[in-house]
Amino acid sequence: MKKFVAVTAATVAMGLASFANAATPATGNPGTVRFIGEIVSGACGIDASSLDQTVSLGQVPSNQFTRLGDRSTPVKFDIVLTDCDTATQKNARFTFSGVQDPAVPALFATTGLAQNVGIRLQSSAGEMLDNGKEQVAPVVLQDGNNTVSFAAMYESTAATVTTGEADSVANFTVAYN
Image (tube, rainbow, N blue to C red; front, side, top):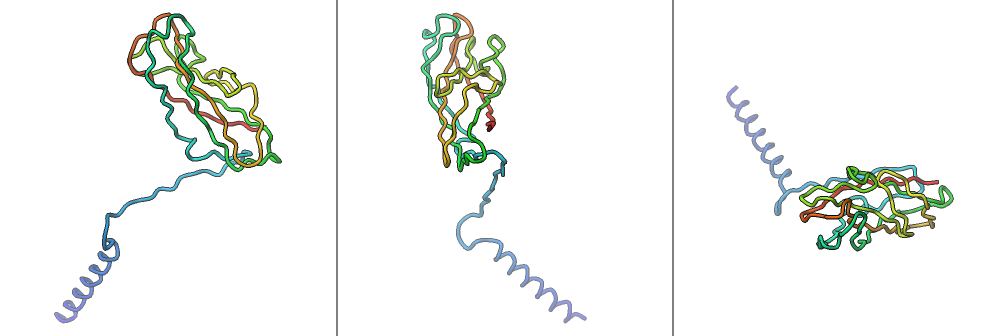
């Protein structure tokens, strides 16, 4: 009986050692790769780099805002639609939505110490895009990839804008027709 136990213990120990060696790479550190995505029914996909991006509006002097509605210089950003098929749909319309500015609901509210300022979005055609409302003028799609340009800027909600960080977040959806 003792011999059986000894052989079994040695066999288990050797098996565990093999398993431990197989689980740990010989060199380097282990890591994880996470794959995410979605299959959609629209006419196009959205490029991964367009799904989560940061647009820096820079440092804008507060003296640039002297009355309600004054705006900073627009900063361009793009959303790339991929593998579009115009046999499916020919147009796209974007809706950007987020927390509304309490004074001017068409703007995106900012967080940070700056006061009396929101963020305004604009299409490449010059249409001012209201928070939560679909753009009026459609983007006419071409087969393949389409780069759709927009701009973001600060807009004053009062005659005086105070200094400090002014950040915001906008989510977007694309409707096809």
